[in-house]
Image 1 (cartoon, one colour):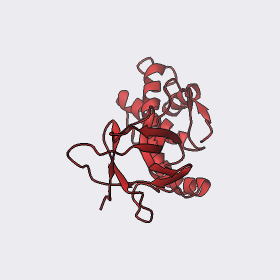
Image 2 (cartoon, rainbow, N blue to C red; image 1 turned 45 degrees about the vertical axis):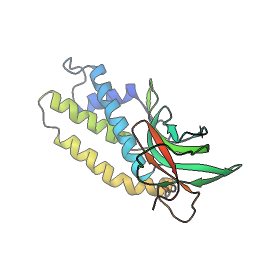
Image 3 (cartoon, helix red, strand yellow; image 1 turned 180 degrees about the vertical axis):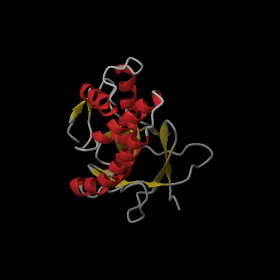
Image 4 (tube, rainbow, N blue to C red; image 1 turned 120 degrees about the vertical axis):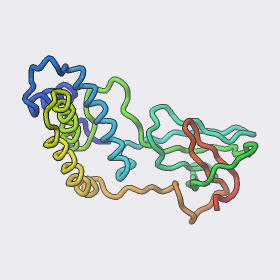
Length: 208
């Protein structure tokens, strides 16, 4: 996990300083906090597209006899991989396949879900790699400019440039992250899955 480098309180100060609205009552700390929250969540989703295991959490799940669904865990943001336990502590990744209409099949067994997590409610720090907090601050600063009918272009350009420049640096810093388990044919455990809004549906057979 990244180290939290900046508190929300410090981020608010940074936004006010960068926009020269350090005491403007048209933009309250509560309003800035809301924008920091939106940008923080959006930035974490961006990070997980190329560093999916940066915020990875694993959870065990069991499908009972006669069933074929797994509810998504609390705090679920996006899937990294879904695996089936074929023997004790021996997991095979399931392939992503099509949704099958009709009665559910018996997909009983033990599974492991590895997923990128959402920020927990009540967080007080921006838990992102060093340097990434600047993206969040620039995006929130752009919102302040727009709120006060000022030009947000500088802040938006800075946020875009930071994303572009940091992407390669972050890959070097954290290494390559695999998306193993979403689609691979080298190991077949005789099951595949599809993802719905609230759960995963596991089906017996081949996805192809």
